[in-house]
Image 1 (cartoon, rainbow, N blue to C red):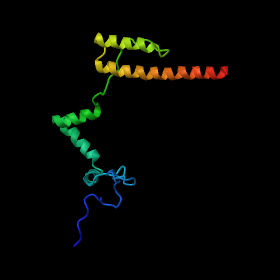
Image 2 (cartoon, rainbow, N blue to C red):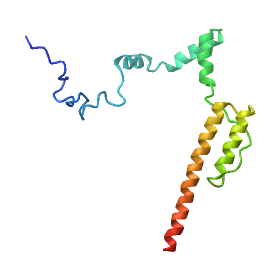
Image 3 (tube, rainbow, N blue to C red):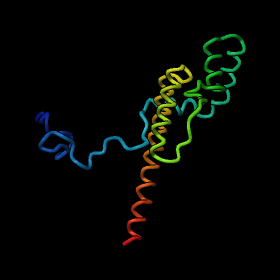
Image 4 (cartoon, helix red, strand yellow):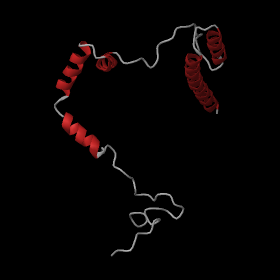
Amino acid sequence: MRAPADRNSGAKSGARNPDGTFAPGNPGKPRGSRHRATQATLALLDGEAEALTRKAVEMALAGDSAALRVCLERIAPPRKDAPVEFALPVMASAQDATTAAAAILTAVANAELTPAEGSHVMALVDAYRRTLEATELETRIIALEQRK
């Protein structure tokens, strides 16, 4: 009869650091590996995709609402977002971000944009402003270095 394993020792010796965290070299499950149930399901479905798809389409055409929903979701998935149109001033310098931000806030206030759309557009303006600032700083640094 074997002695019971120490609860804190882990399956492998040195599997944990003294503070209880996992030690390096214990990556867990390999990337891309699949659960046995998933592997079994895929093996059963292998080669049957066309027949299953045909059956789903037939059921949808016969009036099965669940099959119809599945088919329609594959044909035209729900949109995650949609393009928005409103007047946004041109941003040629980082200082123009203030004008752009004001235009976005005005569009949200006038219900031309939803608050979520305004937030997304504002994030784009902010990212562009940071890019412009970096470009302006680079230009100024190059000019200072050339003067020396």
